[in-house]
View 1 (cartoon, rainbow, N blue to C red):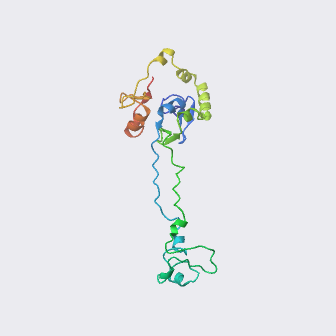
View 2 (cartoon, rainbow, N blue to C red):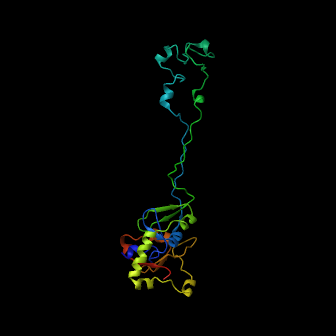
Length: 236
């Protein structure tokens, strides 16, 4: 049970935990450190111009291609090929409502331009940030760092930790905050970042390497042969 009450990143009991979309939790401070720019949204592909209802246009009386039955109908608005003298005249029946159609008319002009494709509201925005879960590898999307700071705390797990530590005082003593001198010490940096070096989040005792959260998730995942490696908090 104790392992389930510890943060995957800092290996300590959760401190102000927030709930990720996958159902796991991070300390709020660890979640802010683990955030990455969102780049998973795919660009939208615009649709080319196309008729809205091709099956309706094909049977429309203003369609340029008329069937044999439609050409013989006196109420049809189509102009047959033998009517050379009526190129610029409208063919109107007694029941016609006043629609004028000539050979030079364009049916598509009566329909209007095609409706542009609407953006997919389910696609995550590229302007936000994501927090990858180190346990299940699923991302959680947030608008920005402020959204992470204002995310509600996971009070359920926080209350469980409080009761657990009250029953195990020796663990509560170990979880006490370090002295001011220790806090003032500079935290180690990640040894694998090539550009924009980030502070280290964990230290692998077998590899003897400090990892930031993105590098640890990408290069040292907790699965396969690396699952047996011991990762400790980089500040310890």
